[in-house]
Length: 348
Image (spheres, one colour):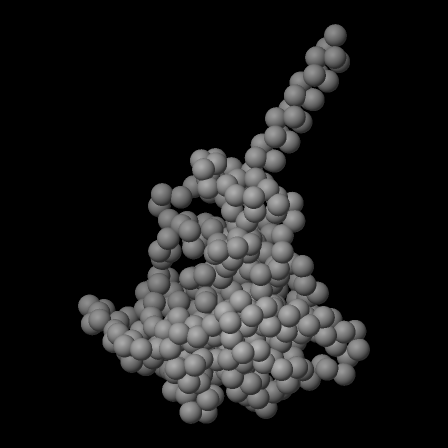
């Protein structure tokens, strides 16, 4: 009798847990259309982990640099661990997470996020954190990111957060319950459309231009982690015209880079060298580069990386070259599909 009762209880528990799991898979956002940035962090785990270069940062990396161009023209094997409004503590923990699998020769960090010393919105936290695989690193990333109104258990059991999402469900939520599709090319988000930068506003005066203590803390941690692992950390400021990059911010980054003996490149000051044209190379009025701008930027940066940091040209490795051949084909296919979608002339 006790055995039968125990069996019934066990079966009931399995049914309940299975149902909750299925509901959670159904209700959680899929990020395969619309706001696809929430799918990018998870894509990294599908890759072979032998990259020589990793990028970490916000949209100013994942929309402005093309790993395919870095490979095809310089043989640099790279990946972008980017996400929307990625805060510096998240960049740090995504790097620490990646180092569980691989140790690149160089890491590129875009310093725009230094302006934030605390998380601004839960939605941005979730687009970065939910895609991370569970580990002690993810736990630390969640605890460092949560806003006061957030709860740790909502990250452990996302159904607690998304239980009311019934009215938002679409066919996509069903189609991608257990599988997903790639939305990036080694972390690069492609856009080919064009919207010139016009009437870009100047920055409003700030009461205090100093970066916050928390932001500096995590930049120090990133610098120390890279030094410990023998990784060259490279600081950059992408050529995005907005949000405004204040001269007072630039002075602080320049001083930090000089003190720590780190390379720092401000691409806003290199428009002529990179060939960036803000009438043709941006898709949203100067916030981010389109494909044309990203490829120009990648050619300039790839040359720098090859000449100044000694990143190897690995195009002679047959197995890796075969992998990149497939990646380049997918990249080209999406490029032509987007040209067709926007009614633009196709490139050869």
